[in-house]
Image (cartoon, rainbow, N blue to C red; front, side, top):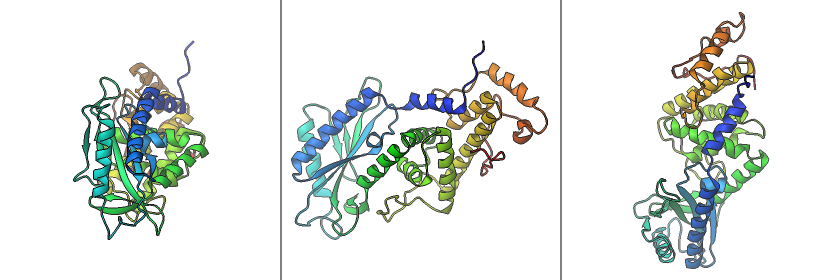
Length: 349
């Protein structure tokens, strides 16, 4: 008996398991993150460490090659901050402490911070497992903003306002509220972005998601919600800090025109996949998803035979059925979908 072809929800659920971080990677990343945190606490008495980035947010991809953390340094005399001392001396102390505490464990350790915009870059020169790229860490030295919300974090030799602790709390709450759908959706979107021009930074994807209204339930629905919101929001301008602390918007990795073009193309493919799936053409729907993600290892296209078989059934559909709605499907080629704002012709949500 021929097994029924999976729905697109089943397809993306399978795909997301292929790109999620492994327990081995997470365990090693946390070990290295803890070692860095301990070194920093030892150097800066009375300070607190915070974790952010993909490991802290629960949306890390495999292979995992970095980890993020920061230390909020106690400044009882108010020496540091805008109009006062910059972060350089604190970065020098942090870098020296990390080198002192970790050099025996990682004998080829490299630490860089001069000329960098925000973080101290730790190059462990010791991949988590053979065959992976080097593992790194980004360490931020920060101070409390004593007159307003958030922190001050480095901007070269001066300071910027930011709220990394609040961001991590917001994302943790979103993960809990959506029963992990938020994190799983972010993981899928990060991978889509990586495979299609990388025109959005990861934080922009998450910031948009925090305001998009993603709910528990279907990953397909969550992605549609995100694309709809992202297109509408970026048409109006760059993304603002969801915590309302930073006075600078999140920068795009390309022109807004290019970013919107890629978003619209992906959204159009996703909408077509949903409509084909709902109409009873799961093979053609999967092909649209495969073209959207552009990664055959993560989400392979259906076989040639399956596409031909369902394509014939699609073209023989009665008048007024999907063939008259969509036009002919792209059975073998991967021609991009038109860069137009998607229209849900069947009102499917």
